[in-house]
Length: 150
Image (tube, rainbow, N blue to C red):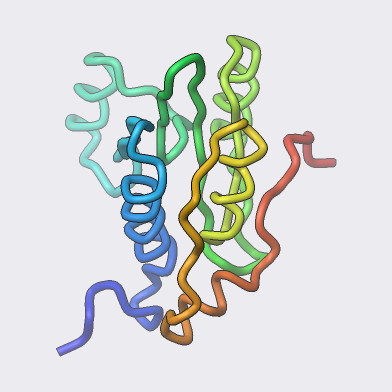
């Protein structure tokens, strides 16, 4: 039986998100972090109902709140093919206009770098005893600057 989170099933982004949530909750206990499950296939009726009840297209995968600030993190697969959609760019721009911090990351190192650049500190060190997929994610290019695609 295949592991639901195996790279063969195309869920590297989901596996990364689980690791990121665990990391933030352990290393930054004063940060409130939660996922926004906007993705996935929906029927037209369900999608229309969700939109009417306030679901907003493009909202980042994770929202974070801490004393004196807030941020959004969009997670992408740990490869160079993953890019943000137009609705994700629009959300990121609106979020930043309202004073929020934003980062698009494809690794745990990227998330850690983003949090530190936002002024959040931790004494926790990212563990080096990770499996091959975890090590690969830690070695990826980590944070994308907020700039419009050409």
